[in-house]
Image (cartoon, rainbow, N blue to C red; front, side, top):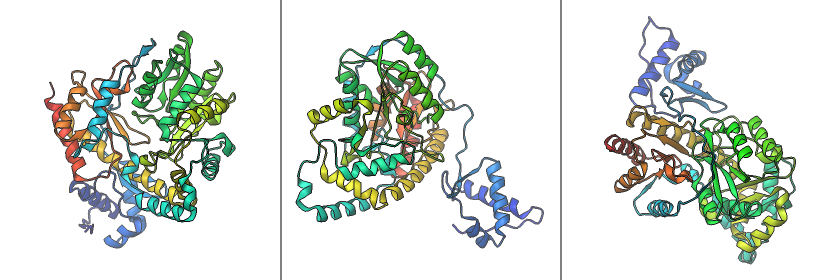
Length: 479
């Protein structure tokens, strides 16, 4: 980009900078979410002082056209629609059985069809893949470790990896011993073990609404019941709704995404997270926190895991590298609180151990600094993709479409007119080689039939932009 400023003596120089950026935006030389030239770069290109460029950028920021990001620069913002977030959902406090298998099977079959653009599956690491650095690390580990990586690993996991994870938790104020961690085959096994450690068939589990469908499949498979707690689009579950359910239903455990929720993308503030733990521990109810998106925040800093606020050891924290590095490596972990003995036994019974080679690779990936370097770039790519996708939805979808404003993670939650059937939209999109996740997958009671989840955890390419436009056209013609 080589901008040329058109001088107008009637304007102050900073106003000409403002006009230039506006022109570049209209001509789509600058696109939503992209970084503006640095102050020094634009100063040199335009032949004006750095303070002049800064004054122009500050004016654009005041107008809501751009935003400043700490130690990163200025970025072009999406133009937001007023009142476009999903509203508060009514509470239905009755437990229900989960029946999701048929629709889930159709969804997973669609994801793996050749030629399908997978906008329904949440794979944030694909927005900035780290395969080169990861393969380089694995080759180094294989050379150094030799035949050792061919053996079974310890049941509770590779000790150096557990030490690295314990060090990382110190950064959020959680002090723990590496022996307290259990390495699992991805976050899903961690959730499965945690659920079985605290509940049994027939028990009632409180879940978010909408919630990650993998949690619902586990509850269904284990013969449990679910109660839905509505999620605020900004701050996580509504605590007053949860309190009402706790007072009226025999809740055995709760499964919540206490940091970045999926699919809404809300971020529960630390003060509210502490209130959540206190509310549950007063009643001796375990909390299973799904923290797989905890590192993928868009704000200034990571939220503290709910584990930090536990006084009775009733919080079980589940996480993994599937969202931040590579889902195929299947390396997750579980902080079991006071349920360590039962969790260890379940891990041994279910899978005995996790891949030693993959654990060793992840440990070295962290030690080398590649993990944090990749994570920083991944968050930047995801935030850029989010801004782009939100702008496209606002441009191509019908007026009145409601869109979540995720504060992390990799997905948008789209709410359409009540007359739209997103199960039907899911089938229509497949005919156009596009996969989405219909909203009814995210509710045990088949709510959200007029909603769907859309992933921006992809490598951005023209096909993605065309797909959003196509989806908007399908919604317009939907019966």
